[in-house]
Length: 338
Image (cartoon, rainbow, N blue to C red):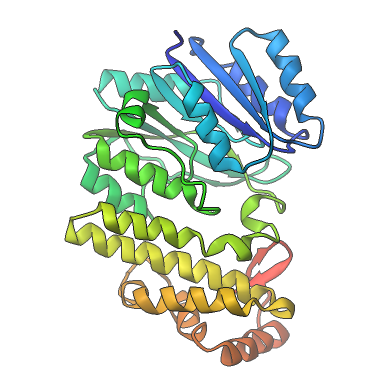
């Protein structure tokens, strides 16, 4: 049996897939299996997967009908044989010591969850943002939850750059919730953190996370599906008993609401009224925790209040677009104020 299972969900990523697989096959840690799950791709991905399976016996390929990334990752979890599991997205790539660093940190320090740093890169592989560098850190579950949910936590809530002992997933039946279309990985890792006792974080940036205009978070379906992220909030609340962490979950709800409303107002010509009502409800429900948090900029707090009144917000955004400085965050070609 392999020591590590690398699970890669694949969907219409032929432009990047070879780069991704090559980076996994180039790992300094070699005792792994690489599971490629083709989620009904309509491009050249199926052929690329099959080609690599013939090239290297460590690669396993599963072809299935399209069902979304959560179901696809769950398929990988169901067939994984490794003692440890990590996820890689098919449009990203990893450095050669990605597995080695996380595995050694976990085994040498008796940790069930190992996390590494991450570099955000653009479509041309230029570095946009890199994890802040710290000495190796160790967390218990409560401290890990706090930093996991914070606006400026030590590590990210995304699915990748983490290595977990498989027995914790199987023993506790932890899987991705297919009803959550955005931030499904946040709930998954929150559940994992809740079950482990010791976590190691190495800020060495071993994972390269590609930020492209056509990624899921910027797709036309984002606004439609964003409301499902609040299922994750509800399930976290049901799982948690620590009062301080419950407050952190409320802050996380506020952050999700704010991001959701930012995208709604960015699409001024196609304002999603029904989705706006959902976002406003959750922002009102958690606004207090957003306003008192010291890591959130005053400008963002002001915009959060404005978002509660669509008419005023549209007028303010229009005026700033017309007369203000043009140095706002750009989301898929649209100006987003935060």
